[in-house]
Image (cartoon, rainbow, N blue to C red; front, side, top):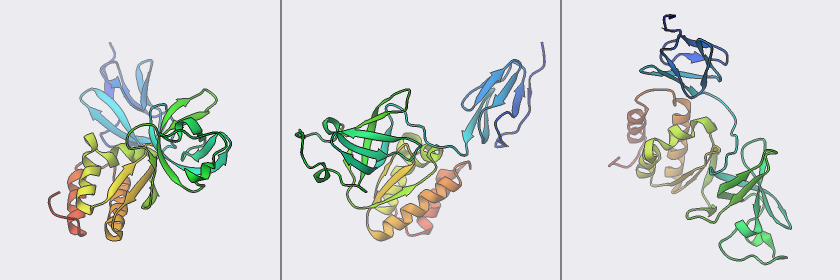
Length: 234
């Protein structure tokens, strides 16, 4: 039996095709695959070795719409059947009349009374076809038009780090800045609060995005918020 060997170190940056390990002792996980006796990288990412499991934290990548995702979309067109939204991907999506509101919208109604071009809407993806036709809905609690505030864009692969485990990171930022924050899985983030709080929130999120690969990031961000005027009690 061939001896297993780890070919990379923890937190090394690798590119697609790099050999990460040889032998059957190590196991492939996110961003990696096995080919014969080797575990190989399938993306640009940061190596994370947990026991004998090798996975990668993606460092780049566009958003690919998936059924069940909650996203923030921008209205870019209005037609007879509903609204077309920009999804921060190569594909736009349709929010139909029947899924665009919890109230009944009669045919022929002025749809701009619900959403105008340029509005941002937090919605859920209900279907993605093989031809990448994407359907949306706002018929769930917490979904709908976003009023006021500001939208920032982050790398979609960094969204889990911004949210944190069970929402811990984003909850900490909300508490420290007094803002309301909604994070779309497509990389659009809505922030609303007092101007000072909004500015600190945006800077904090960009800080997380930049340093998402670092261990101990939660404590760093906690200290960053305190040093920059964040409220006590975080």
